[in-house]
Image (cartoon, rainbow, N blue to C red; front, side, top):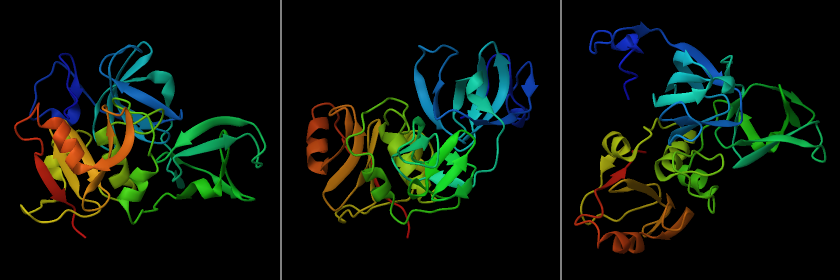
Length: 272
């Protein structure tokens, strides 16, 4: 996405897009557990995506309580509350659990101050079975070194089974279809755009007609995407069940047939 408004644009676009003003991004990091990226500077505005702790947001403009810019990992443009952002510090660890409580002390019986979501990035020091971060302690079983790469994106997605469907969500409080795919692939070290149409264009290679699907293959529908768990079943965050579920691909296709002449737009396979 291009970071451009009527009044201002990212300086990186100066040679291709005219704007009255250009801004050099001020790189900041999310300091809250999560924050929605919104389409306009209003808490009630539609959410387009979500930032997780430690992810980068490039700020191009600040007006009142809101910062306008784009997320560092996928260049998604929108508004984030100014008080959600702070110093962008290098991460030492990444959260690998669907939910990771931040304990007040290095003790699982201590109070929980907040909860981080899978994919959140933090900086801390290992301390007696815990990772000590600025606002508390994460259990070491909930984190890995920041360069950790999952060997199976589907197993990452499966951690979200039953999570509520949330438009724009990437795991904190809920997740949407492209957010689930982006997060699962990202944890496997595979760069992934945010939206389904961009994912369909950018990811993998087409699977030949008649060729059997296998675990990890992507199936794209109009405005939707899922990951195959095996040759016939798919995991996806969907507004039909309003959660992350595994169901037969044929069932999904049958639901879409009355509405779309071509329910399946593409089947893509990411290389070994």
